[in-house]
Length: 146
View (tube, rainbow, N blue to C red):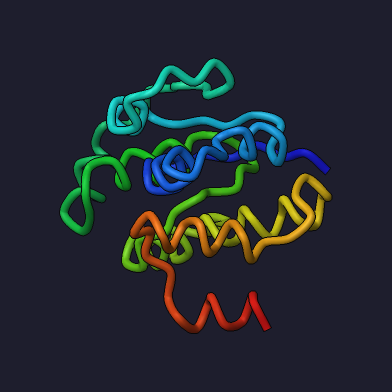
C-alpha cells in the first residue's frame, strides 16, 4: 500500500538526527518536498523529489498564518493529487486539515512504518527522537508506548 507523501522539514530533520532517513522511502512510494524544505534539511537525498509550488499566491496567503516552509509544503500538497501530508506543527496541521488534506505527523509516519512491517516497534525510535530534542507531546508518547 505505497502512497505519495509531501513532507515538511521537521520530519526529515528528526529522522536525520537519529540516522533513520531511510524510513520515508520505504513507507512511501514517492516523497515530495518544496525547495525551501530541501534547503532546510541540508542533505542531498536521492529519493526526495523536490518540486516547486506553481501557485505563489497560495503560499503568500498561508505565510500569514505560518512559517514559509510549512506554507510551501501545504501549497505543494494542494497541487499534487492524493498525497499524505507530513506536518508536525499544530497550527499548520489544523490549517491543512481545514483545507481537506490528509495529514499525519512524524509519529504517524512511524506508525505506518510499523503497520507496513518496515520497523518491528516504534518505542525505540520515539525514545531516540526525544533524546535529540524532537518535541513529541506526552499524550502521544503514552498512547504509543502503552
